[in-house]
Length: 508
Image 1 (cartoon, helix red, strand yellow):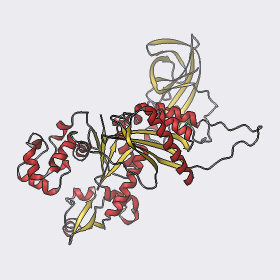
Image 2 (image 1 turned 135 degrees about the horizontal axis):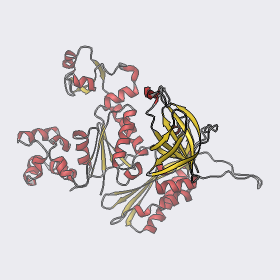
Image 3 (image 1 turned 60 degrees about the vertical axis):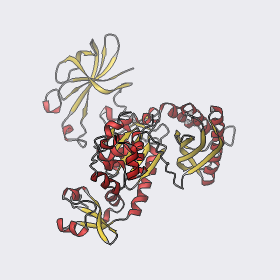
Image 4 (image 1 turned 90 degrees about the vertical axis):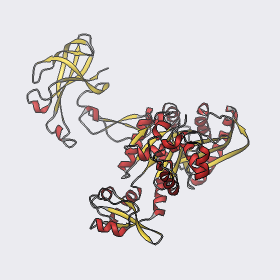
């Protein structure tokens, strides 16, 4: 089942202007702003910020009327060409990070084929949340929806998403029925004629005879309906800017056997590596697109820990994913693209038998990351924080050393729990260790203990930690098992913590 994401950027011209030329507009978002352009001989509002829309301004309104309604209104010229170019750059950014198939949906949207890519991001909900979050952090207002078809996702993103919506497979008709006719991407003249005839929502058209509709409005109306419901295909032409390194092979006769696909993948990799070498680049992410004879596209994405152009390594990584390709009735075009590439300079290998070659784990990391997902391969690095759960962070497995280490003046447990777990205990306040603890239904008598080690809250993060403290103890039960427990608070002042006890780690 194909899954498609539609992203709409309702304030794209305004957001693009604020990101690219912040010195040309007011520093305060409270001041209304509109963009103006000429439609024929008239000067009309082509985009309005959220504040301007709340004051009653809308797209298509004459600029003179807008200025009369809102004194002090900022009016800047609209540049559709710059909007389109910037939208394509944003789509390229999404292509490199989300899915191999991304296309621009002008004037203010993108469409993404997320089939098979959602599990790499933790599911469809997590994928949409991450995508919208990163856009918002970049200063872009966005809404997104995922559905079975481009038409359904496009309609849901613009009329339902707040700011995201995930449609269950097979529910397109039920979700689209109450939506207005404008959700079908029809020309304004067709929409006006349909309203004149009494059609209000998409559901009014679903069970109408097709022949009269086609004779009256042409083939576009029924085609849009079929595309939204999944009865007609609507292929997505993937974005491929000229700066990307791409090689492709078209076949006179479609191929389907795994051995044949592997053979031609090897040939494409050799061509791609030669093209990368000419530019002094190495691939960080490869996309293999398999165009089937039925217009469907099967995709394979391979990520690399560092720039590479070793044909054997790249061929092996791609061929390991052939089993995920469904050739259908045959593949007529294979396309291999380096969607992310970085400079790669040749390095001299050891020139003497006495020199030990530097260990290179990138091959192992690439194999593991492409089997279990990039998020499943990482290493831990220290962070300057006394709060234990904040003192480590996940980093890329081959990232440079951070140049810091964990504090060694107090022992730390070999296993730190993801979050502290509440325990029952008995202890003499304020400085004595527990006499016994009950954790996960088992009561343990404490034989030995050491502490307390006081950890203060990080007041610069939030006000609640201004006076918060924890008192940590290392304890050992009668069976010789050792635990790391703490009391929230100093044992005297209730404002420093709840005085409840928690288990935070286990010593090996």
